[in-house]
Length: 238
Image (cartoon, rainbow, N blue to C red; front, side, top):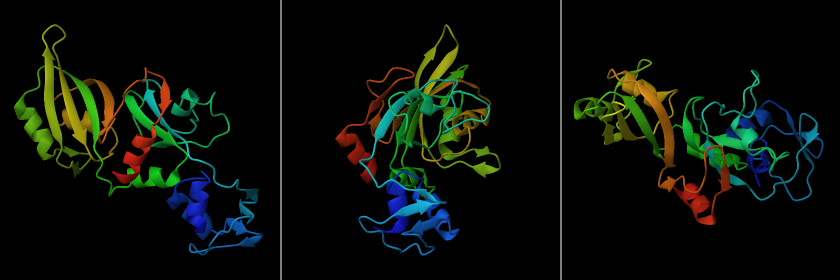
Protein backbone atom coordinates (compact mmCIF):
# COMPACT_ATOMS: atom_id res chain seq x y z
CA UNK A 1 0.00 0.00 0.00
CA UNK A 2 1.27 3.50 -0.83
CA UNK A 3 2.56 5.33 2.23
CA UNK A 4 0.06 8.22 2.02
CA UNK A 5 -2.90 5.85 1.77
CA UNK A 6 -1.49 3.71 4.58
CA UNK A 7 -1.29 6.69 6.95
CA UNK A 8 -4.83 7.78 6.03
CA UNK A 9 -6.09 4.23 6.54
CA UNK A 10 -4.49 4.25 9.98
CA UNK A 11 -6.65 7.26 10.81
CA UNK A 12 -3.73 9.70 11.14
CA UNK A 13 -5.37 12.39 8.99
CA UNK A 14 -6.81 12.94 5.54
CA UNK A 15 -4.65 11.66 2.70
CA UNK A 16 -3.78 15.23 1.68
CA UNK A 17 -2.57 16.03 5.20
CA UNK A 18 -0.65 12.76 5.32
CA UNK A 19 1.09 13.73 2.09
CA UNK A 20 2.33 16.93 3.74
CA UNK A 21 3.79 14.90 6.62
CA UNK A 22 5.69 12.78 4.08
CA UNK A 23 6.93 15.69 1.95
CA UNK A 24 8.08 17.51 5.10
CA UNK A 25 10.26 14.54 6.06
CA UNK A 26 8.25 13.68 9.17
CA UNK A 27 7.64 10.03 8.22
CA UNK A 28 9.98 7.05 8.62
CA UNK A 29 9.61 3.46 7.41
CA UNK A 30 11.81 0.97 9.26
CA UNK A 31 13.85 3.86 10.64
CA UNK A 32 14.48 5.51 7.27
CA UNK A 33 12.97 8.88 6.40
CA UNK A 34 10.78 8.72 3.28
CA UNK A 35 9.68 11.68 1.18
CA UNK A 36 8.47 9.82 -1.91
CA UNK A 37 4.67 9.56 -2.01
CA UNK A 38 4.97 6.37 -4.07
CA UNK A 39 6.78 4.55 -1.23
CA UNK A 40 5.14 1.19 -0.59
CA UNK A 41 4.44 -0.13 2.91
CA UNK A 42 4.53 -3.89 3.41
CA UNK A 43 3.02 -5.99 6.18
CA UNK A 44 5.27 -5.84 9.25
CA UNK A 45 6.94 -2.53 8.34
CA UNK A 46 7.56 -0.12 11.23
CA UNK A 47 6.05 3.25 10.29
CA UNK A 48 6.41 6.35 12.46
CA UNK A 49 5.48 10.03 12.23
CA UNK A 50 7.75 12.38 14.18
CA UNK A 51 9.08 9.35 16.02
CA UNK A 52 5.67 8.07 17.10
CA UNK A 53 4.80 4.59 15.87
CA UNK A 54 1.68 4.36 13.73
CA UNK A 55 -0.70 1.53 14.60
CA UNK A 56 -1.58 -0.58 11.52
CA UNK A 57 -4.98 0.02 9.90
CA UNK A 58 -8.05 -1.41 11.51
CA UNK A 59 -11.62 -1.63 10.33
CA UNK A 60 -12.95 1.87 9.76
CA UNK A 61 -15.71 3.39 11.87
CA UNK A 62 -18.58 5.37 10.34
CA UNK A 63 -20.96 7.24 12.66
CA UNK A 64 -23.91 9.52 11.99
CA UNK A 65 -24.61 12.11 14.68
CA UNK A 66 -27.46 14.53 15.13
CA UNK A 67 -25.48 17.61 16.09
CA UNK A 68 -27.24 19.95 18.54
CA UNK A 69 -26.79 23.71 18.68
CA UNK A 70 -24.03 24.87 20.97
CA UNK A 71 -21.18 22.56 19.96
CA UNK A 72 -18.40 23.04 17.44
CA UNK A 73 -17.44 20.81 14.53
CA UNK A 74 -13.81 20.33 15.50
CA UNK A 75 -11.71 17.62 17.10
CA UNK A 76 -10.81 19.97 19.97
CA UNK A 77 -11.58 23.56 20.94
CA UNK A 78 -9.18 26.00 22.59
CA UNK A 79 -12.12 27.90 24.10
CA UNK A 80 -13.29 24.85 26.02
CA UNK A 81 -16.57 24.53 24.14
CA UNK A 82 -18.26 21.18 23.59
CA UNK A 83 -17.24 19.51 20.33
CA UNK A 84 -19.00 16.94 18.16
CA UNK A 85 -16.40 14.40 19.30
CA UNK A 86 -17.68 14.75 22.88
CA UNK A 87 -20.95 13.16 21.74
CA UNK A 88 -19.21 9.83 21.03
CA UNK A 89 -16.10 10.07 23.21
CA UNK A 90 -17.43 7.79 25.96
CA UNK A 91 -17.83 4.92 23.48
CA UNK A 92 -14.73 5.73 21.38
CA UNK A 93 -12.23 7.24 23.86
CA UNK A 94 -9.04 6.32 21.99
CA UNK A 95 -10.26 6.42 18.37
CA UNK A 96 -9.15 9.23 16.05
CA UNK A 97 -12.41 10.26 14.37
CA UNK A 98 -12.80 13.07 11.84
CA UNK A 99 -15.93 15.11 11.11
CA UNK A 100 -16.83 15.01 7.41
CA UNK A 101 -17.32 18.68 6.59
CA UNK A 102 -18.67 21.04 9.21
CA UNK A 103 -21.80 22.56 10.69
CA UNK A 104 -21.83 26.00 12.28
CA UNK A 105 -22.03 26.41 16.06
CA UNK A 106 -25.73 27.36 15.86
CA UNK A 107 -26.68 24.83 13.17
CA UNK A 108 -28.12 21.44 14.02
CA UNK A 109 -28.44 18.16 12.21
CA UNK A 110 -26.70 15.49 10.24
CA UNK A 111 -22.94 15.09 10.48
CA UNK A 112 -20.73 12.08 9.76
CA UNK A 113 -17.74 11.09 11.89
CA UNK A 114 -15.28 8.53 10.56
CA UNK A 115 -11.76 7.15 10.79
CA UNK A 116 -11.71 6.86 6.98
CA UNK A 117 -9.47 9.75 5.93
CA UNK A 118 -9.89 8.97 2.23
CA UNK A 119 -13.67 9.19 2.39
CA UNK A 120 -13.51 12.36 4.46
CA UNK A 121 -11.18 14.01 1.96
CA UNK A 122 -13.22 12.95 -1.07
CA UNK A 123 -16.57 14.11 0.29
CA UNK A 124 -15.20 17.48 1.42
CA UNK A 125 -13.07 18.19 -1.67
CA UNK A 126 -14.22 21.28 -3.64
CA UNK A 127 -14.77 19.05 -6.69
CA UNK A 128 -17.35 16.99 -4.80
CA UNK A 129 -20.86 17.78 -5.99
CA UNK A 130 -22.71 15.89 -3.28
CA UNK A 131 -25.80 17.79 -2.14
CA UNK A 132 -26.34 18.82 1.46
CA UNK A 133 -30.00 19.38 2.27
CA UNK A 134 -31.10 21.82 4.98
CA UNK A 135 -34.36 22.75 6.61
CA UNK A 136 -34.38 26.48 7.32
CA UNK A 137 -36.92 28.49 9.32
CA UNK A 138 -36.89 32.05 8.05
CA UNK A 139 -38.42 35.18 9.57
CA UNK A 140 -41.39 36.48 7.64
CA UNK A 141 -42.94 35.18 4.46
CA UNK A 142 -40.57 33.94 1.77
CA UNK A 143 -41.87 34.07 -1.79
CA UNK A 144 -40.81 32.71 -5.15
CA UNK A 145 -39.13 36.04 -5.91
CA UNK A 146 -36.56 35.51 -3.17
CA UNK A 147 -36.17 31.79 -3.85
CA UNK A 148 -35.61 32.40 -7.56
CA UNK A 149 -32.65 34.66 -6.74
CA UNK A 150 -31.23 32.08 -4.30
CA UNK A 151 -31.62 29.25 -6.84
CA UNK A 152 -29.79 31.25 -9.52
CA UNK A 153 -26.94 32.29 -7.23
CA UNK A 154 -26.40 35.27 -4.94
CA UNK A 155 -23.27 37.13 -3.94
CA UNK A 156 -21.83 36.37 -0.50
CA UNK A 157 -18.34 37.27 0.67
CA UNK A 158 -17.50 38.51 -2.83
CA UNK A 159 -18.45 35.24 -4.54
CA UNK A 160 -21.54 34.08 -6.43
CA UNK A 161 -23.00 30.90 -5.00
CA UNK A 162 -23.61 27.93 -7.29
CA UNK A 163 -27.10 27.20 -8.55
CA UNK A 164 -29.11 25.22 -6.04
CA UNK A 165 -32.61 23.91 -5.40
CA UNK A 166 -35.00 25.40 -2.86
CA UNK A 167 -38.69 24.96 -2.10
CA UNK A 168 -41.17 26.37 0.37
CA UNK A 169 -42.41 23.73 2.81
CA UNK A 170 -44.89 25.87 4.75
CA UNK A 171 -45.65 29.29 6.15
CA UNK A 172 -46.69 29.47 9.81
CA UNK A 173 -49.15 32.32 10.27
CA UNK A 174 -48.76 32.27 14.07
CA UNK A 175 -44.98 32.58 14.22
CA UNK A 176 -44.76 34.46 10.92
CA UNK A 177 -41.99 32.12 9.80
CA UNK A 178 -41.44 30.23 6.55
CA UNK A 179 -39.88 26.78 6.45
CA UNK A 180 -37.72 26.28 3.36
CA UNK A 181 -35.85 23.17 2.23
CA UNK A 182 -32.68 24.05 0.38
CA UNK A 183 -30.01 21.80 -1.18
CA UNK A 184 -26.50 23.15 -1.83
CA UNK A 185 -23.29 21.55 -3.09
CA UNK A 186 -20.78 24.03 -1.66
CA UNK A 187 -19.39 24.40 1.83
CA UNK A 188 -18.84 28.13 2.27
CA UNK A 189 -18.87 29.50 5.80
CA UNK A 190 -22.46 30.07 7.01
CA UNK A 191 -23.53 29.73 3.39
CA UNK A 192 -27.26 29.09 3.79
CA UNK A 193 -27.70 31.89 6.33
CA UNK A 194 -25.80 34.33 4.12
CA UNK A 195 -27.79 33.32 1.03
CA UNK A 196 -31.01 34.35 2.75
CA UNK A 197 -29.39 37.51 4.10
CA UNK A 198 -28.54 38.39 0.49
CA UNK A 199 -32.27 38.56 -0.29
CA UNK A 200 -33.16 40.40 2.90
CA UNK A 201 -34.24 37.43 5.01
CA UNK A 202 -33.03 36.14 8.39
CA UNK A 203 -32.68 32.44 9.23
CA UNK A 204 -33.74 31.74 12.82
CA UNK A 205 -33.23 27.96 12.79
CA UNK A 206 -31.14 25.74 10.51
CA UNK A 207 -30.81 22.00 10.41
CA UNK A 208 -29.07 19.68 7.95
CA UNK A 209 -31.42 16.81 7.15
CA UNK A 210 -29.62 14.92 4.38
CA UNK A 211 -26.31 14.35 2.63
CA UNK A 212 -27.06 13.29 -0.92
CA UNK A 213 -29.77 10.64 -0.69
CA UNK A 214 -28.72 9.72 2.85
CA UNK A 215 -31.32 10.99 5.31
CA UNK A 216 -30.96 11.33 9.06
CA UNK A 217 -33.21 8.67 10.53
CA UNK A 218 -33.41 7.18 14.00
CA UNK A 219 -31.13 9.65 15.77
CA UNK A 220 -32.32 12.00 18.50
CA UNK A 221 -30.77 15.45 18.93
CA UNK A 222 -27.34 15.02 20.50
CA UNK A 223 -27.29 11.28 19.75
CA UNK A 224 -25.61 9.07 17.18
CA UNK A 225 -25.72 5.69 15.47
CA UNK A 226 -23.48 3.59 13.26
CA UNK A 227 -24.01 3.86 9.52
CA UNK A 228 -25.35 0.70 7.89
CA UNK A 229 -23.30 -1.23 5.33
CA UNK A 230 -25.62 0.08 2.60
CA UNK A 231 -25.18 3.69 3.74
CA UNK A 232 -21.39 3.33 3.81
CA UNK A 233 -21.40 1.83 0.33
CA UNK A 234 -23.53 4.72 -0.91
CA UNK A 235 -21.12 7.34 0.45
CA UNK A 236 -18.15 5.56 -1.11
CA UNK A 237 -19.77 5.58 -4.53
CA UNK A 238 -21.82 8.78 -4.56
